Length: 197
Image 1 (cartoon, rainbow, N blue to C red):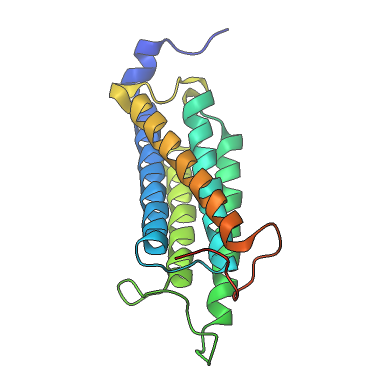
Image 2: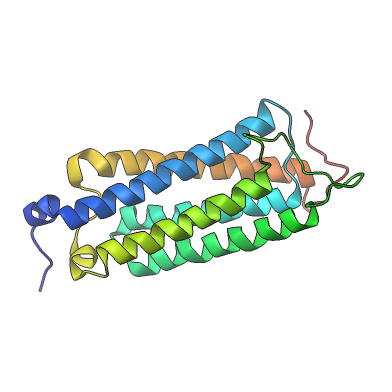
């Protein structure tokens, strides 16, 4: 038995809300990653090893969202995004606690944005992702219509999601090459970066 017809899916407010929520999350994550890479390439602020792990976590959250748009909605993809959001929270809390008391050579890395440094922002971002998913699951529930709907067909959302997903993949590739240049094939350390400014 097939799922609901395309016309029904497109008009279903639950499916539209789910599409919009996922697209908004993907756009925000893409903007955060763009800002981080702008700070790196424009302002010469090299990311520390824990900062790089925070980027990996954000790429993982975006990957789970992108899979929903590419292959249809699945709670497995949501679970993947949630696991990476928890990973982001663990790494950013660790980094914040390491640098919570500034001492010579161990101050927060990078420029503060609105008075907060990237590790603290990463905690807030992780909590926002987890809270957003919790609210989505609370308000939209686990309705079978989401599983059967062809996600992202609503009013061009699919095209926007594809462009955003492609953009995040390009950012991921640039970041990967940058890490190879920055750290080589060995372990990444907080000193002796190989990346030329």
